[in-house]
Length: 355
Image (cartoon, rainbow, N blue to C red):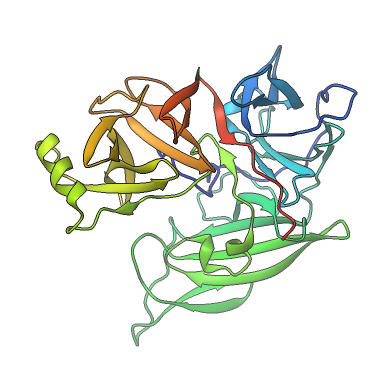
């Protein structure tokens, strides 16, 4: 139940060619003025709709719709200038795979993106194969695919001198052992209709931020998490830590974490989940030397939380005994502006950037 951005789709997916979308949105060109909430919802038949909810209020508008049996397997992202969108969805047929559309956000129309030229689609063979992990925009608005070739079933064996190498496409790449699995991480960029590999690295971390290209891409909103950030661990000398420890003496596993907002610090728990940490309730505002609850966020022991901050707006995603529920909170007034259940890939609509 990971709620943080994350940058991976299901590793079991194998690439397939794109096919046309089922429909588009209204004929008039939408103008995305002011803040908004992006999310996916199921439409009639096997159709998924990309929606935009104006904030703090207003009627939701359909941005784009596409064939998808399950919106939960889809993701969206935006170009830096806010003029383009990218939708990635799992295949609706019997064959596993991905379909991708490049969306003109002014017209509400989408064009299928061919994945031909990326690692060849193939059925499960009992062997490790390269798979797509993510698709997004680079700062220039070009499409980039991140590909993961992880050696889970066939890990590299040490050489007589103890060194480790990954063999790939007839070449051997040295790699230093670490937690997880050895992998070749690759970045492909779509140039003049052709996918061109622009970066490759052998690693043991499987973190695409190890790629220079991966560090420049626009964040992706998917069901595995909200766009956003991780908080920072509360320092031992912070007076708030004493207040939190006294208020919740049973919370001994994990750590208290702080998110800085325009309305003051927000505190929540991070607890171990495998080899990473996940966010959990309780969640508290810390203002004036006091701790106050966050409207709409229960203190249940199994309530997982994720956050995204944009200006004074805070998106809180809840899962567990409540949810999935998406809250939008004004951090200055501490008031809940919106509460919606069962949204797919919720995220605050990004502000365009000219950088």
